[in-house]
Length: 479
Ligand SMILES: [Zn+2]
Image (cartoon, rainbow, N blue to C red):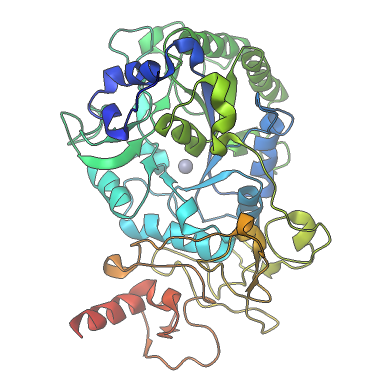
């Protein structure tokens, strides 16, 4: 009989966490081998094409197409591609707005605000964070925990599972501190930082023939293997298989393909992706999937299983591993992240730096950390409605401003998060920071001069962002 394993049991017992999972599962043979697939940085059609060349043709053991996690930076992102990718079942996570390491909170929170406003991603769906350059601090982790993130995935597991001192831990909570990157980040480990209920999903390195001296973490295929001076796809494939086998035969610790997909794009000008390299990665996945009980998953799917581990025979009971498509009629005209539904309904936002499309109306300026949700301004004078807290993305009609969900099966409630000025709680909805043509609130020009704004008190988003919101929140706190 299985006994209950609470989340905190994993914390502080990093070396024994798998023992607890196995106690619940009885045997390692009951444990699936997860391959976490992630991508980082801006989302564009060519980066999604690059990811799709590895995933679209595959099925997990339950017949579903694998999902992955896209750690998204908003700069250079085409917002409608984020919407489409999310509605297709993938996870959207935070990678800061402008791609900075050890980010200030405006970079982390602004990413949430912009992805919610312009890509229609519910705030509750953005659960994870990865630091650009994997460069983070204890304060970064504290910020993430404070602002309602479920997990970070910036730490490295850099000692092979074949080594008795391996740090390839299953994901764990920080109830008793971090257990990875202990020598890399100040103030880590030995019980710090204590962030109860907040998870770390380590990034698991591959190791070439040099073992611990030859780790390969992100885009391992771009590295030369075994100390050689140039890339050799065969050598890369060999050590990727070997490390996978080590995990499979040890405690089934997850392994990960952590990609910067632009390097593997076949249709981005200036990038000359190596066809042999692409084939090698697919060969690796083909080989891995031929083995029993191998699943390709997103970070949130992995974490869902770890939080409630089920033996292989009961994986059909894990809702996060299932696949489903939103029940929206194919001929319905609704800008909702489903390409066939939203055709012809996208707003094209012209900016010199990077033009993009969105269902949710163009901002008057490119979102940035000091103004992540600028006023809305469309060339035809129309106003679109942002995803509110009581409707899910595929059912929200941003043109009509109405929720088309008419049954309990599509009912949805988003959460608010303390990501506004001075920790103010924000919720989705509204039409943008200040634009609706009849603003009656006070006007204020931020000191960076990046855009004037005025406030409408009735809109939660209005108090959400920028220096304007900070002033209002401070005044309201005095009242
Ligand atoms: Zn990055």
